[in-house]
Image 1 (tube, rainbow, N blue to C red):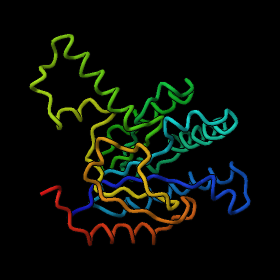
Image 2 (image 1 turned 30 degrees about the vertical axis):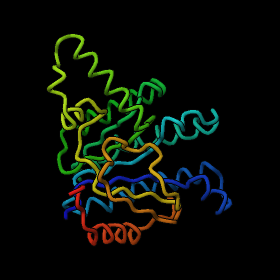
Image 3 (image 1 turned 120 degrees about the vertical axis):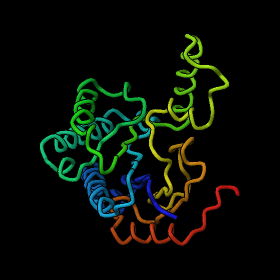
Image 4 (image 1 turned 60 degrees about the vertical axis):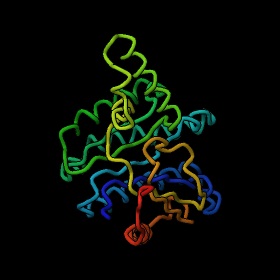
Length: 232
């Protein structure tokens, strides 16, 4: 049983801020740095080709303007970092953004597009960042694309299968073999609803900023010890 696609729900930044008695800005900065750490760690697993992070849910966009401004500023700084360093180029990592990206400010959308274009030909691994994302919304948006193609005679309903439907999702990538969620919360919260039907789940009690390489290794070891039957 090989682990080729791994996904993360990096939960607990705000609770960590209260626990550590630090500001929200500091907690989110630590969480962002942790994402860089995890990307660095998984690049050493040669068989892992895809890493997907639940960066910001569609529901998160209803948070206060002050909190969103903090998140958008941090995200913009990270996009600049991708452009100004050679990390993704050196490691041949393609960066892809999935979700309702139209919900974001124009400046952020332009920077996301520029980063995607810069990394689009890198082929060693793909890093997906789910932003303004909700799994049910993704299915609805995909259904609208199907309806449009059918309306214009570009698709026959008999040609639509569970596999071909994936082509209408935000991005096409191997379904996650393992999904790791931090903070102790045991649910997927709308993450990769269509793609996670047979994903193995691992729940870590630590908050995201506390997540360590040892925790990652333990999750992967747990995955390797499981027997996946896929309903057979």
